[in-house]
Image 1: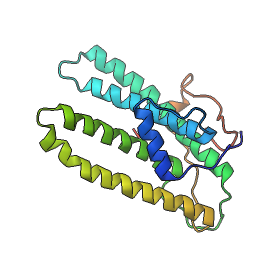
Image 2: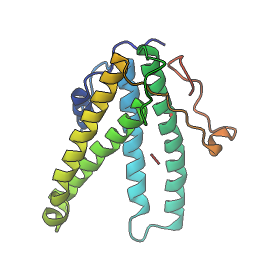
Image 3: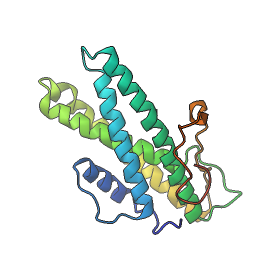
Length: 198
């Protein structure tokens, strides 16, 4: 499938991911942004399940059930990263001789999603926890700096790929448990490349 539009500027992606946490979605996001929002949803669900496993007094049954669900979500996550990279790879004309980046855009977008969730959850704790002002509010400036740095790095990576001065290899998850029958997500919906942290 063709990518309907280029990836929006990273600042716009950050805004859309933040809005999605509040339940606000674009009426019709393009194919690539739809994949990214699906990845973001998966990361939120995974985060919530991780929280469930850390509740004091959580039973072994609750923890085991959450861990099994986390494994399934993590596999979905890896497939989505692959699909995002495959879509970008199909959309961008990459130089075959440019130096390789250490991470693919899909991997960075996944990190961006997790960081946005971390900031939102830290902000919630800062407002609700009795000691939130001291512990959690104090973390927010550092998290915001990390978000700004990661956003800028992703923008530079995409700019360099477009300019032909850097290239990326589309991410391929090759986890052993993904080879087991019944665990595959299905064929890539992008029509390019291979099939999607934790």
